[in-house]
Every structure is written in C-alpha cells, then in structure tokens.
Length: 265
Image 1 (cartoon, rainbow, N blue to C red):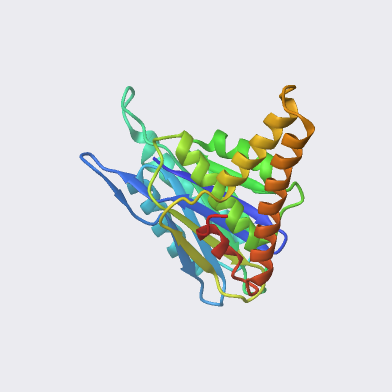
Image 2: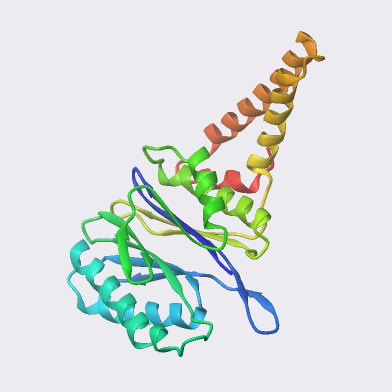
C-alpha cells in the first residue's frame, strides 16, 4: 500500500511517498518517486498509488509522451489525461464483471525550462490542478487532516515543507499500518536549482517530542490541581526546547534545513 503527498510551496513543489511495496509473499522497500528529465531542461516528477504494474505503465507512457510534447503546462496536462484515460479504457475497464478491478492514482509535478512549476492529481480518468496540497493512497484522509493542522494555508517554502511533509508521512504510517518503509521526499524548486531528493531511513521524533512537551503544558493548563508554579515549569521546558530548535535552525547553512529531520530535539 502507498501513501503519497504533494505540496505546492511558495517557491516550488514537494512530493513525498512511503517506500513499502507489498508482493504476493513479502514486503520490500523501493523508491516510488520517479524523476524524468525533458529535452529542454524541463522535468516531470511522478508518484503513484495503486497497482504497481499499471503505475509503471503510466510512467512509461508519460515519459514517451513528455519527450515528444511541447514544454508548457497545457500540453503536459493533456498527456497526463491521455495516459490515464488510455490505461483505464484499454486495460482496467476491460476486466470482467466481478473481478477485483485495479485502480491507480497519480501525483505529477512539472517544472518548465523557464523554472515555473505546477502539480496535478489524477482520480480515475480525471486530472485536476493542485492549488495547495494533494494526497493519494492508503491513509490519504489522515495525511490531509494532519496537513490542515500544520501546513500553512498560504503555502510554505520548500526547504521547510520537506520537514513538514516527512512528519506528515511518518505520522500517517504510524496510524495506518498498511503503509510503511522509508520516506522519500523530493523537492522541485522554482527556477533552475537542482531537484533535491532525500531518503529518510528512520522516522525520528522531531514533532513527536514537541507534541509530548506541548501535551504536558496543556494538561497542566486543564488540571485544576496544578498550581501556578507547576504550570510555569512545564511552560518553561517547552519554551527552552523551542529555543533550542530555533538555535539549531539558525546554525544550519541555507538549503540544509532538512537535516533537522535527523535530529532529536
């Protein structure tokens, strides 16, 4: 099973996905984000949820069409629509009635040679433009709920969105046991900066520790038996940890904020 997410940022796009594949007899890890370079400096970055063979077919078809199409958003959206419609009409909807019919969903990010970016989501044969964030696969509703809590309505910057994306997937995998493995995060900045891929082998407790500390503060607020000094003590611990996190962020060079993911605060 797969959980994948896409975030439209102020200065780019972030895609992320878990790495767990379920075979007939076993489970294994494999990257689910595919990066396809265009002939003129443009890029497609694709991830999908559903049946692996049909996702692979979609990626192959998109790669062939992307090589031949004009590098503009309208043409790219058209090839996504053509690909997904072809797969459903010629393959998936040909299954006899009563069979376990496969489905696939895709998140497709594009960066033009001009440096502009756009993100699309598919559902059956529909293709829609993502305005803020999109989620596909098992646990998508959980991830959507987490994003509504911690992802800003006006979008974030891609360097910090990497951290948010990783945390959303880590928590979704914890709740939805069908997803698992590593987390892959791929960032597509606006402009000509290189596409960044990060492989997170373990899920740290970055937000987890903050949630625990904040929970202690909230419990102290709500517990009528706590006196003022107890509440102030819990609040002070939380403030110290927040300051420690800020100091760590200030010490990191530009573009390396994602390293915070690997530190337990």
